[in-house]
Image (cartoon, rainbow, N blue to C red; front, side, top):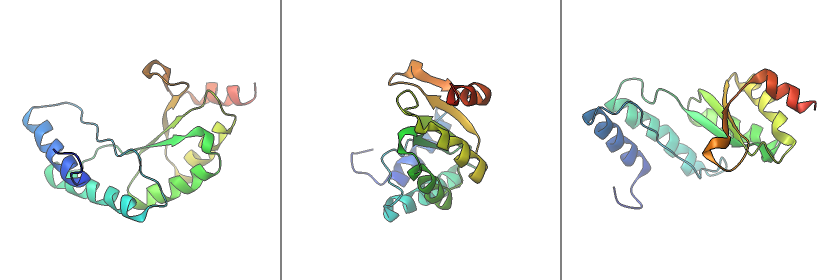
Length: 141
């Protein structure tokens, strides 16, 4: 679609195309949404709704990606995102340069959302499957 197109329309058309082309996995990246921008948060609800019109129970996973360096502000982000749409998993990035990553445990516990991945650097090779025991050990090292 053209630049500036409605995000929900892009998601809707993407699901249709993925089904037509028999694609196994479709990622819909809604990056750049700030939890304090009501219209952007409302779009998340709309995106989920229109995807579900094309494919029952779509999206199958909604992953919230949080910046590990934001500290306690991450709680408010999680609160707003979970109010706007069902979040199934967490990814926490920038854990290589911050001691604030411990907030992820509190968010996971409070919102009962499992942590799926952590980011330990800038590259794709720095994305790791979350290992809770290794993570807790690293917090106390």
